[in-house]
Length: 281
Length: 318
Picture (cartoon, rainbow over the protein chains, first blue to last red):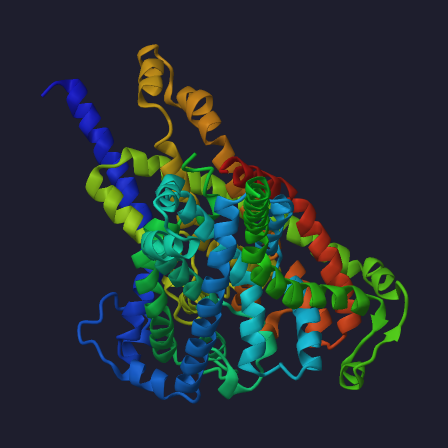
């Protein structure tokens, strides 16, 4: 092998080593969470860390799911998330069709609204939302939280679905119209089936955002049996000084699992939602 | 007779065409109406209340009474004369600058690295990044808290083993600087996957032959990056930077939960936390509303570039 080829190979190996090091550093927290969740208590608190739980135990998971309010709060999360996403996706789909297929006065204003709302810092809205919802007795009610989430999920869904719609050639619909299809027929027979994957991906992403949301849930739901899992997890440690790290990590793993699974399914389709247009040109 | 029938036919056809056009013109409005209605009710009404509250004395008593006492602009002057507000603003600006710079620079480096490594490393690293990306923020906070706790946090152990100093029982939550540094690590860690993967996708737009031609001409890698890669990535970098600025300026969950409610003081406030503590936690909604308005105005200014860019993209697509 020539000296040049060897040098090149050494350089490649160097880059690969750096790449692997970055991988280890980035993934370590996730690994450490899962690994801790399966360790026995003496392995967790020992001065020298145990890297791999060779005798994994499920006791922490059992402890976590038996903690007060876990199941109630999981149920709350599921209700809030599914209602929010179901309503949002239907309404947003209609608006996305308007954006992707029609020119109309006020279109620009609508785009500004859709983009602008997503930029609002959520903390900036907790005060008025809390006061208004309190006036209508919607604090500590899942309905109040659902309504709040819709404000943020709707614009996101509109913008993302618009992107998917732009990927479907207009000509398909136009030729169907020429062939005598009605508007509704075009929508049902052409747009809906083609948009299937886009609708699923957008819903899943909306699901993730809603499931993960913290500050509104923290402010608008006070009663422990009425909280979402995210808030439940944030209160897990309570004020006790004897931290139950194993159970905390088991609870964290459980909270993360649905999100991680869903995210891995749709990431490719939707990752560029926020930068759409800039990346794909 | 025939002529009259023809005019009627003509007229009815014209009427139908008119109706069609009216239908077509109103369709988009009908389509956006539900979204506009929902957003209008759920957002516009609270925003109206936000302005109203900011001019009132509105605490728990007023909340129960459903009636505030008008105080004019006193809430604003109280906030603007509060040295805590200005110190918090300065701290948040510095914090944002550090976080955004680290996120963008490291994200760029990882993107370039992804383009350099062999396929198996690339697959491994990008899957790892996606995994990190998918972690819920509250979960990430708990894991970081566990890794950095002073008694048996693995970070103290690892740093000691690496001979970077004696970190035995080192308390990372002892000083404001240390607390905010941890928050920065957490935020940058969480934001890197999105930035790195987006930039890596952008790198695919850099024409190969252009880079090769430059290399044949003897250009150093650094020059190739500055003169070819960077200009092409510019629009993406612009968007990523403005998004990061907006997000980091308004960040709440990471600092609030990682530092922990009990250790939050006016000495380590960030903007969102200041607002949460002074407005919501102390039930001083009027003053909180004034802080909210100031914060929303700052973020609105920061968002102008991003929103304009996205609107242009939105217009161009039609």
